[in-house]
Length: 411
Image (tube, rainbow, N blue to C red):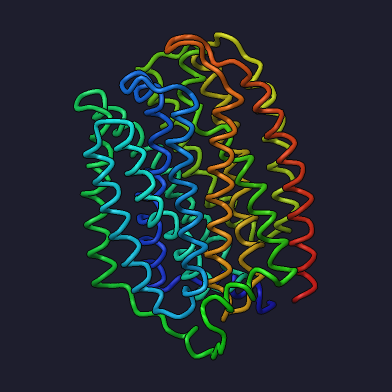
C-alpha cells in the first residue's frame, strides 16, 4: 500500500477530532451570522422599508469590511500563535453580532454588519490555516468536507430556528441566539485548543508589509487568488435574493420557507463528507468541473420558473445546493496546496479577503441588476443575474485548471 493510501485511511486522533469539531462549530456560527440575513431578507426589507439596493448593501457591507480586515491582517498572520489569533478575532465577531442583535434602524444595522465583518471575515481563513498546519494534503479534503458541514448545519438547525424565533421575537433575535452559542465555543477554544507556533520556527526577515507584498507578488499565489475571487463572485451573487425570489416569484409561503432551507441543509450535511472523500480519492479539478456543470444546468432552469409547486421548488433548491457545495471542497483543497508553510497564514488571509470582497461586489451588483417595484411584487431581471453567474462559473473552471497544474508541478 502506498504512503498516500495509508494517509487517507489513517484514523483521526481524539485531539484531531476535537479540532475538526470545534472549528466546524466556529464555522457554523460565523456562516449562520452571514447567511441568516438572506432568509431574513424579505422580513428585513418589509420591516425597515428597504429597497433592493439598500438590502444588497447591508449584505455587501459585511463582505467589504471582512475583505479589508483580511488584507490588513494578512501580513501579521504568520507572526502569531494561531490559537491567540483565532480567539482575538472570534471575540470581536461575538461583539459585532451582539451589536446586530441590538440594532433597530438601517444605519445601526449597516454599522453593525461592518463591525462584525472586520472580525468574522478573518475567522474562516484562520480555521483553514489551522487545518492546513495539522493535516497533510492527502487527508485535507475530508477535513474541509467536515468543516463545510457547518454550512449545512446552519441551514438544518440555524436558519429554521432563526426564522421561527424571528417570527416570534423579531428579526434581531437570531443574532442574540448566535451570541450565546458563540460564547460557549470561545470558552472551549480557550480551554482545549493547543497553541500553534510551529510556523514561527520558519524565520522570515521581512516586516509585515514586506511579507504581504511577497505573498501578493508570487505568480502562483495570484492564480489561486483569482480563482477564489471568481468562484466567490458566482457563489454570492444569487445568495441574498433566495428568500425574496421564492416568496415573490415562485409564490412559496413564509411558512414553507424554513423547510426549503432545512432540506438544503440536510443535503449539505449528507453530501459534504462524501465530496470530501471523493476529493481525496479522485482528481480535485475533475470533481470541481462536474459540480460546476451540474450547477449551470440547474440555475438556468431555476431562473426561468414562474409560480411553482412547493415540491418542485424543494427539488430545485437541492440541486442548487449540490452544485454550489460540491465545488467548495475541491477548490479549497487545491488552493490550500499552493502556499509554503511560512506563507500559509498570509496566503489564507489574502485569499479570504478576496473571497469576501468578491462576495461584497457580487451582492452589491446583484442589488443593481435585480429590481423589485414594491414590497410584494416579483423580482425582475433575476434571469440576467443567473446568466452572469454562468459566465463566472466558466471562468472559475478555467482558473482552477491552472491552479491544478501548478499544484501537480510542485509535487
